[in-house]
Amino acid sequence: MEDKNQELFQKPSIQPVMETSLYTIQEEVATSKSLMPLSLILTRVHAGYFHITLSISSQALLWKILSNQVNSSQGLHHIFHKLPTLSFHLLWCLALSTQAFLSLIYTLKCFLRFNMVKQEFKHHVGVNYLFAPWVSWLLLLQSSPWVSPNSALYASLWWAFVAPLMALDVKIYGQWFTTEKRFLSEFASTASQMTVLGNLVGARTAALMGWKESALCMFSLGIIHYLVIFVTLYQRLSGEDNSLPNLRPTLCLFFAVPSTASSAWNSISGSFDTPSKMMFYLSLFIFASLACRPLLFKKCMKRFNVTWWAYSFSLNFLALSSAEYAHDMKGIGRKGVMLALSALSVVVFLCLLVFTVVKFDQLLWDEDQDDEPSLGFLSD
Image 1 (cartoon, rainbow, N blue to C red):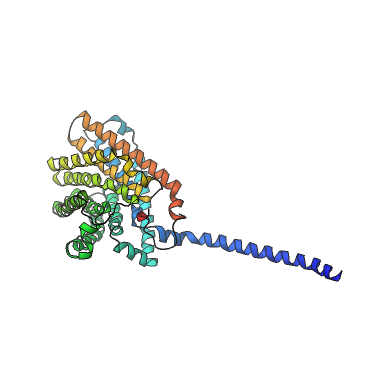
Image 2: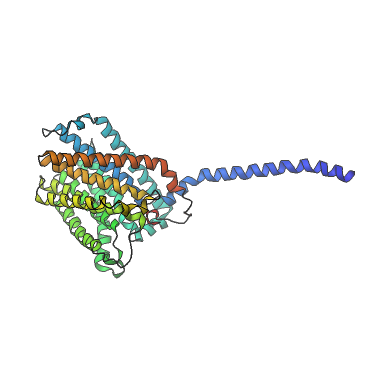
């Protein structure tokens, strides 16, 4: 009887200890999860996330060009009279806030996760995306409703954003010329065209200030290397298969680059002349070629990836050049093409914006990824 009584008295004393320990474990897990996001964001966010700001900034620039054409004597379709100025300002502010947030995150990553940034810089695909932040800043500068191209602030910001682009140009183009381990024919991918995009956007920004020599310098540097990259990719000279499924959306850069070149030359020459038309026609042809092959993108659409935003900003650049073409050349057909491409770019942009908001947690809390440094745009 005494043994039984002792057991009865011992049982209640054990239960509170178990409950307390269980509560403590749950509290520690909850605390660790609450502290995880900052570290996780610094680990997962790479330069490819600036695809988002590229799209928002180029969309804001498209709206600015369309609204300016409506206010000019060359009035367009009445639909653009219904676009409120407030919407453009809100879009530009959204682009600026997103760009500032991603720039802050990536700056923190440079200090706290420098090895990951170094790994990205040394990767033959990842290094191309380091152009994206500076291209986004240049697009924000072009579409700014408050900073005039004639102001000293505009020129100062242009130098601040172009200097890193030129440094990356020297690094990447120089290694293609001189380094046996980094020949373009071995490491070319569709993402290599991002290097060209930076030069062409910088050229257009300089042309808006009236700096034609600087604009011609950057334009010639970009267009010559575009021809080399285009031929290399077109003939499949690469010794390895760089067409990973998640890089398929960057195929749209094939028509984004000539579209940007068309717009840049229009700003340099002051009119949509023959070179601008030739590059615009090339971009339309490549766009039609890709649009006729939707199954090419089937595999990359199985799981959401930040490279999907390449669809949006590529369409934005095509719509932008078509708007300048329709403004310079009269004709209902040209304006119809401009309206169709502009409407398509807006629809794709809005769809991706909603999809990113809904699926953003999936990018950071992907169960297939571990805590190792990742280049998410390269994963299958």
